[in-house]
Image (cartoon, rainbow, N blue to C red):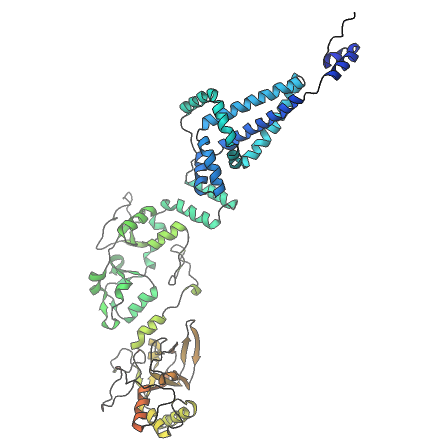
Length: 580
């Protein structure tokens, strides 16, 4: 009986062509290795998982996870909370993933060699592992490590427990040898560069980046860099008197604190708050030196080399928002003068306020209605459109100065002007024809003439115009109507401050003769020398009462003359233009 042909592999068949038919029959009878191929696919997937998780999980620092848990959205917080307990055991996680990855890669090499040959299996397994087990998984996990890591935690935990007999001793040894895991730490310059990078990526806005960068460098700046030079500070001399012009200049300056100096501007002896001057009567002309002992606040000083963070802390503790900056000798400590209330400060070179510190901290200029310059360094002028014209308040304070009819010794006297016969005839003719309130149908020309003779004609000189003479002030009640005979008036109407001019023979505020609580909604100011005819409700009441004629239609009972009315030398009380 013939012996069966020997089994040859493919290499033997190719080397010995005489046995090729038997080899072909043997290869045809051998089944395709489906189990090995399926195992290869599973192992390659596991290799990619281990490789990707090694990069994805270990690239997430504990500090980064803390940040995500504190400031991320709800979904990211949930992912970070699932990863954090596992990531906290960094060396144990590292050993588990690397051991699993190495074991899987070894099995891939063995199976591929069994399916082909040693050399071909090695090359095939290397290509598969590099492409599908390393490059692709790591590229994906480097971008979505948080999401993928949270999804795979349910697999990683059991695997850490399963391999702990091998990995746990190695991890403990690494913990002992290397110590605690070091997180990523940045200095100020690195943080500033990181902010620039995030701004370029549009992760944060440029305004946020500028503000955060300014806060990082806040402690590196000193008082000299942000102070307002003493030459640019609004101040008052201790010898000045608080008359109307000085108080008006204080209001125009717009500052809540006014330094007081003596002899030289660099010698500060006190600080006045503008709110302390509310009850000061400008007519009393009180010297600044008289109220300084009662109203002055503490004088605080600091050397010009003081860091801004120290300045801010000191202002908070001392409850003083204004510090005077003095020169500093070389080697002198920066804290000299802190915490002390000084009676006088010499050698002042500038001031620093709480507003200056806040502006430097947030890197934005705070410009209010009264600011003239945008910052203390460049001294760039602020656009006039950004400043509010609020001097109308002082128009109301001047109500006692409006067209004063006082004695010749008054500071800004207004003056009566005698009416000529031609002026009386012209006034009677004009009023009877154009002002129906003063000439109802039942009033005779004689009565109107009496009203004209009884009323006042005021002459406003060039000096009066210079001092700012106001005929009416918006919101201030007035029982007088007027008729401009000569000159020009500036009319500033409404909240918008719309300004116009009126000329001769213009009647104003005729409603004042009908309404006992009339207050104009405009301000009228003389801008040229003028002659103005005033008629009051009191004069009209007096004339109509003597004639026993009815009041104009729609009028109420006319009030008695105000206390500011003056008596003529003959004792007859006449209505005068009030000192508003």
